[in-house]
Length: 548
Image (cartoon, rainbow, N blue to C red):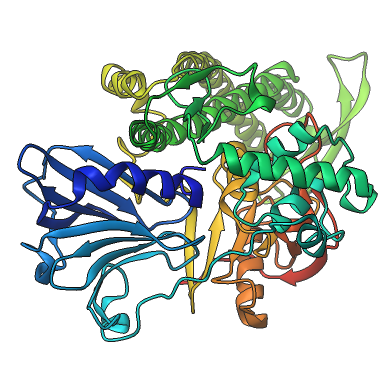
């Protein structure tokens, strides 16, 4: 909800008194996809920071002026030195402007696949763009499109969609500025428990409309809350949520402080997972690999020793040389060690009986040495598995950014045998990402937690959702720049090939991949993260692989 229209509107209202009359001191980017505008006042400097990278779009303010000395790009130079005349937000749209003296403005577009920031001239043309600068300079600035909001029950009825999977989703369609949490709060306050929108009676729909109007009124007077235990909150809300009244909550006096704290802690959480997740994955894999190796060694060592069999064959050939025909490939002789029972011994036809016997003695000695070495390797393998498992258990006790940093530093030597590289200096975008052009991107989860986050929080209902059929694999989303954009068969099959590549079907020549719109993917109640139920799927047969 930190990027919700109502939150941005509340921020703008709180910022106006402080930012009016300040001067644009600097505009720069030192974090990928984040733009910082520094505004200097007579008594206080402010940094307004905004991210234009999905899935975490945000805009927040911090006091002071802090700038790194390296890896900083200075932007929008024509706006520097200008006075701020005001701060505004478009009516029912997530376009936030810092209006400049002499005309023009700095504009954040905080929605969609092409979120961006601009310096806009007085004639509403783009002077400079933070993203896609060359393509957008000189074009028209984004125009506001007020989201429809029902003011009467009749308008609410007109926007009610019975083809949604859940009543909550129908509420979001009817009251388009509400996100998931506000839609859930609407159901809770209305006392509606009907799961499917087509099953809601007129009385229930009226109760939902009245609850939504009450929420809209409450949003005029924010009382911000962060929900969640521990260092990393799981939700921001502009008002207290009754459906979460039993959850751990932290209240704030201002929206400004709450949003800044939430963004800071969410960014810390992303950093935490960039450090934590590769370690957990590597230690899980190492522990499982070493345990499997140890089990195979134990199975081998518990079987009858081949060394004894080879040695016995050598003794039998030496004792019964006269029974071995010249050039024979095998011979059947009485087993003098087993009451004379016949035994068949393979032979090298080019060798004499004595030479064959000596060959078996050599193989017996070699097999005994290998077995002794295997017994030594077994102890080492078990010890490695135990070390990996102990590190994994210690890792799973950590839930703070400082904790994971200290763990990596203090146990660097112990981790080295199990981790390929010492750091996770990667793009802050949390998922694997493939650009297919035209605004289409493929996003792939890296673990169960990310699969759940990707499917149910980062993707849009109209995005395509893909998963290798019948085998474990990563959740994969083909992100569409807007709901009307059609990817075409080539992009769809490329996305399916990527989904197959990140699954147990990776080594197959051809693999089935199911495809559906994300809105037809649900999480069964009480299911583990990553477990889903899929409706209306199609199946594509593809060769697993990723684009070059």
